[in-house]
Length: 311
Image: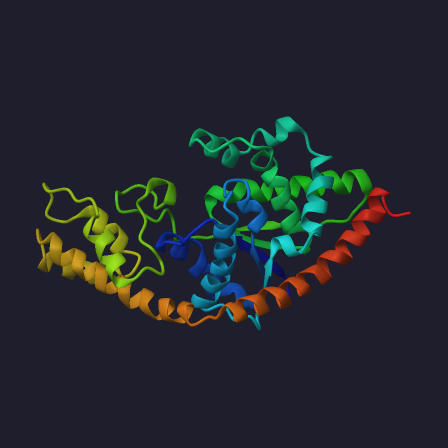
């Protein structure tokens, strides 16, 4: 069975863009692979400096995975910081790639352009991600089109190591998630926390009502485009065609219909998420991290022997 790895950064509450763009496609296919789901807490340190918030978010990611239907018997859910081999291998990769190579990273340039501090962790982020992937002989990494470069960086790290020390790492393949595209936000732009245009995935009904009723609409048109584009995530074009014709010009009714459809999707997941105890989260992470580390330790033992630090 092929190995698959994906991860979520514990940087805050998820929105429906995260669900349709990453979580749902993953939940639909993870059982076909030997799947590793990482809570990428070390990656979060590039931007999140509040320890209490980070602890809460780490537990939140575990709840998110379970709430969307992930079965812990069919996937290994683990915490990145509990497997120190990730940072060990990242250092070795950093000693193989060049600064100009890392300077080409689109994600780094985009985040700095948005005002994020250009710290060294953010700059070296691709090599920690390469270590995340390569430690587990990962063959499949499901990503959006905008993350394709991360997998290219992991392949380059594998090639650099193999050329320097001999064959050790498989070159991973990206699985570009098709049919999702860019999930639109409440203002028509890509749904993103940085744009403040999100609909919370596990929000209360009142929170969903408040956000949906605030969706930007064009008063000149007969059909609210931004409402319709979000609605397409939940219903077919055929179904929406009838609904929007019957309520032409009645933006309030169309927004209320969207609220009901979002609530129908979210309510069962919200209830399931709320039922997961802190003790459950700790058990899942303890057992999953132990399984992940068992495999990572074996790989790192061979890596250390190859590079010469094992006598």
